[in-house]
Amino acid sequence: MKNKVEICGVDTSKIPVLSSEEKKDLLIKIKSGDEEARNKFINGNLRLVLSIIKRFYGRGENVDDLFQVGCIGLIKAMDNFDLQQNVQFSTYAVPMIIGEIRRYLRDNNPIRVSRSVRDLAYKALNVKERMTKENQKEPTIEEIAKELEVEKEEIVFSLDAIQEPISLQEPVYGDGTENIYIMDQVKDIKNTDECWAENITILESMKKLNEKEKMIVNKRFFEGRTQVEVAEEIGISQAQVSRLEKSAIEHIRRTYK
Image (cartoon, rainbow, N blue to C red):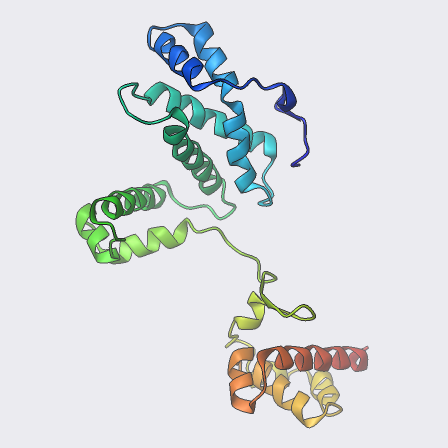
């Protein structure tokens, strides 16, 4: 993806580069309604879009789609840029392009969130950004809620709703030989003794485990403890718990077959 030369029919190796003076001159012409200058300005800033979408690689999104959305952000920045501002165009455009891409990713999240909840979340984020700049510190949820005149629970719910989901297989720790995953940190209160007791074959298989393996399997799957909790209770590291757990499960599987 990173080495792709053509995106949306655009040969990225041939994208022109504009100087600051050229950008300024084109922006003046654009404000006067010059369409040719408008097209030249857009083409001359496509490298900026390319540099920004690289931040979003690896999310499973089509690079062509990200590029198109980034171009929309670029056009919005161009149309709203004030020549009287004492800032470079790129300084103004970058957050607008990033914002456009983030909105696209949120709106296309596989977990559908209602429009009203998304709108409240975006308002909360805008208020948070503004208040942070004004006060030089992040506002609390209570302060954001007061500003928007809504309950703080609504703010929390809306912000949680637009968070991107993560895989249970996402590693949270690795020592070079063994990884610990999100699923290893999750407590399972559904797999109780009553549920597992129905499977006599597995219980019989557990009898062939050593005492430490039995203890770990029992605490993890019968009592619903996390690996961290088990490690603290029996006085070993979480990595050791993870290795022993995997070894015990593999032994049970072999026996079960």
